[in-house]
Structure formats: structure tokens, C-alpha cells
Image (cartoon, rainbow, N blue to C red; front, side):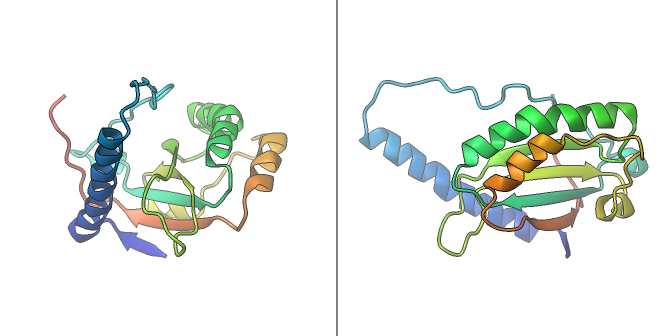
Length: 171
């Protein structure tokens, strides 16, 4: 299923995260505990698109939804096995994928939400997003992928979005 990442969809996402942020602030104010610094962006690399030249830009994002009882453990396994593999594959040109990332889902929550983590893959073309061709010499991290798959409660959900426009603050 291909969905456009529209202004309306972004507003809905913004509303969900606004509620989460307000809830976090209220919880923090009520439970007076010493502050603990947690670095959530270890090993992040930023990839800037090319809005002036759409052919060189990230035009499609594939979001993979994972459901597990142990989201932090799943994220750590992906960082240990998948992250170095996909980085090496992108660097060597073994995949048309342009970027990858993952995260634990903080909100939305509820009985009808069937995922606890997400990963995202960025591509230039729709064809690459729907059917990424891997170099035949690529050796996948079978042990790590097997460990990740065993943690999943259900089959992954996948959505493909066309990136319409990204607006950023000046750097």
C-alpha cells in the first residue's frame, strides 16, 4: 500500500506526539526524582536529501512495523547485526537503499496498535522501494536476522510513503 505523507497525516502524527510530550511532562512533574541523562542518539548519522534535485533526493520511505514484547532488545539486536550490515551494503553499492534507522514506538499505544518498534528505509525511486535489488554477492547476517525474527510476535507490517516535501530549520 502506498500512502502520501500529506500535511493532514503529518498533523495527525503531530497531535499524537504532542499528547505524548504533555503526558511525559506531567508525569515528570508529579514524580520528583533525580534527573538521569539518557543519550537516545548514539551512533546517529544524518543524511541530508537534495530538494533541489529530486533525482538525487530520498523520494520514498518504507516503514517496517515490528511487534515484540521486548522492544529495547529488538532495537539492540538490529543495531548489532543489521545496522553494520546495511551500512556496509549501502557503502559498497550492494543495495539501492539510501538510509536506514530504527526506533522504539513511544506513542500511539493501545489494544489496536500492533507494533512496538519501527525501522525505516529511504529510497530514490518507487521501484527501489518496492523491489530493492541486492547484489548477488551480498551475504546477509543470517544469525542476527534469525535472532530478530524469533523476537517478533507477528509478521512485520510494511507501508510505503512518497515523500512530498520536507521542511527543515536552517543549520
